[in-house]
Amino acid sequence: MEGGLGSVLTTRQTRFEKEIKQLLSIPDDVTTMALLPIGFPADGTRYGPTRRKPLEEVAFVERWGESWQLGSPGYTSNI
Image (cartoon, rainbow, N blue to C red; front, side, top):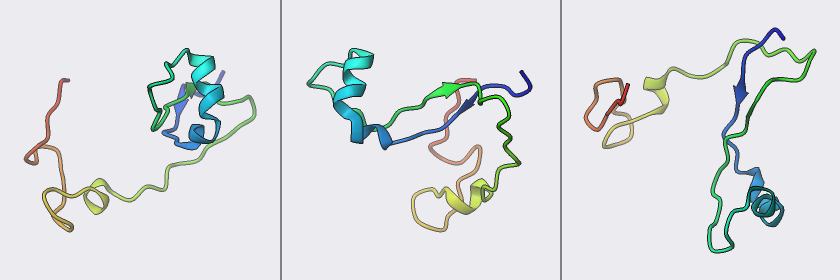
């Protein structure tokens, strides 16, 4: 096994809400909003470097355009 664990935040499960609830024993009065599946990539699957924009270009504090960075107001860490 070459790669480590992979994950992705998804909302696709909403199309299969009934099946997902049954599979995971989720009560009927609970609605899933997103799932974070975690697993090992299939053999032969290769992923290149991410193509994400830097955090300060996509996360803002208080109002649009005010870059969020580590240590910004509202940032907390339990690490």
